[in-house]
Length: 233
Image (cartoon, rainbow, N blue to C red):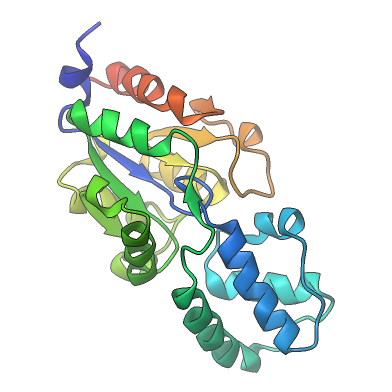
């Protein structure tokens, strides 16, 4: 087998953010619960609400209100969204933390020549703010939210834009995620798919049929090496 630096050099590994790189549920659900309380509704438990995450703030608000027993009228969304973003921006990393082993795995991949990108349905500015707050921005060559791409995941153009922004191309790229939006983008773009088993997803990650399923970030460098070796020129 080729040396890791030969296999990974120049490849782009794109990552989802919420539920994949960082456990953001405490701050996202905390913000949602503040909004629900302001509207006279009961807060949601973290374990119940964490799987509502992953489709952007508007969808989280909509699903949160539905779970709290009050389906949301469309005309209320703009005001609630603005309040959510303002509160979340001020508390973006109160409790959010990278998943165990994440930073070490990313550093190992970079040391072996890989380029790293974030491909997330979280707005780019919020993604950058979160990564800066956690001292993780130094690890990525590009951060691409849906506002910086032609369309959001699962549209493959989002993944293609993130890979291109990091200086790579799809034939030498991988997608690392936790949910159906990541799986859909990877399959449509025809790139290798690694899913984490500990993220935010209504459908268990194993049932999304990734090329590799990992339970801890210690497994990530080996999984990337495996998949990129298979697609070497």
